[in-house]
Length: 80
Image (cartoon, rainbow, N blue to C red; front, side, top):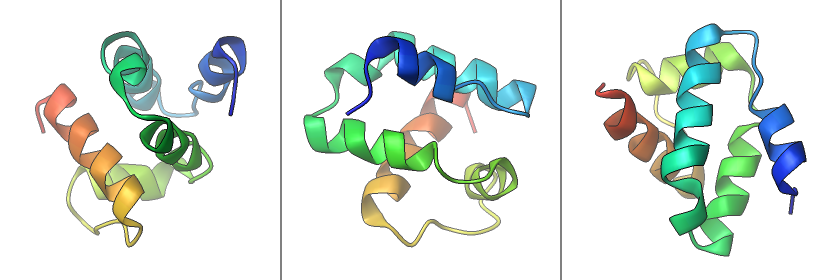
C-alpha cells in the first residue's frame, strides 16, 4: 500500500487531464474506498495513460473488475 506522498507522486501523469482527474479523485473519493478498492486504484496507476483514456472514453472496457469499478467512479467524477 502506498503512503500519501507516494500516491500523489504516482498520480502525476503525462496527460494533464489525468493529473487533474486523479488528484480530484484523491481529494474527494479515495479515503472513502475500502482497502481493496484503494489497491485497485493503485493498480490502475500502473496502466499506461493511453489505455486509461480509452477506458474513460468507452473505447474499451477494463477486463479487471476492480479496475473497471474505479474507472466507472472516475467517469462519474469527470462527468463522462
